Length: 167
Length: 167
Image (cartoon, rainbow over all chains, first blue to last red; front, side):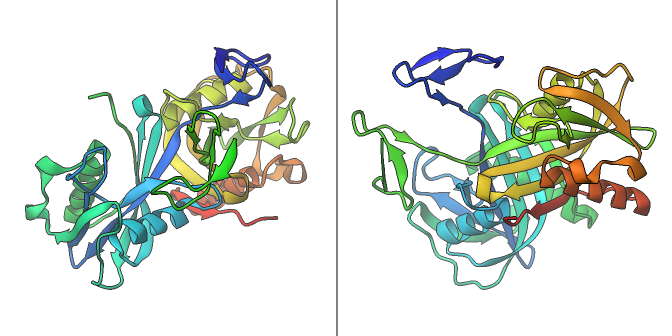
């Protein structure tokens, strides 16, 4: 593989020097939910790297053949064993320096029988005062939680599109 | 390259049978704008396949190292030569059967000196009654235009998240 600008393009791409196939690389979507039960938010403690042992909202890479909503639902079920009713889109945060776009839906827990999936150590519900702010795995998750509690305090939930600058 | 389920994964991935590297494939984001000037919408007639000769909103694949907003702005400049002020996020339409997510911002044209870019035959402003509905290139573009005019009629613009079923 060599990196060069294909004819008609403006950016360098990875091109196979044997077959000439162009391997485009584009940002990936990480999709998840903010699952709520009676004012408390469900968080997962990560059993995998990166950020092993830190807390996160259930989320993961959107897969081919699924919609953003389906991906968010699937990740919530896989990571937290939690069945939710999806609500409105809540936050979209671009993270260009890692080539990602993070997208969260609001969601309502349908039952309290959640349990950690393979990539999760434990799952728990947190009221605002008990959110482990210092142990949140990713800045997009911390930001989404801040936006959620601020919207709740205002009693109006909006859709928030933001960008995350490099740390 | 062979397709198989890597250890710890649940889906089959393309794996290089020589070096073992896993080549993940995930949906790509197509980002663009609904550029408006005094109630008229700017459309581009495509000079490339697919859908050569059909009309579209300015949009294209989000690139690494840019935010969704930056990508939408860049595509509008590249395809229509149009400088815009980005407004609020307007529509996100999942198109799982082609592994894409389309995302449009509202935008206000800052000048009328737009001109077709390399991938565009012509650029023009259309009032609602003159939108070439039968010659719109993509269903996500037609749907976004319908949503835009419906919201304008209501005098309230919202963010719309939808899925596009197979044709």
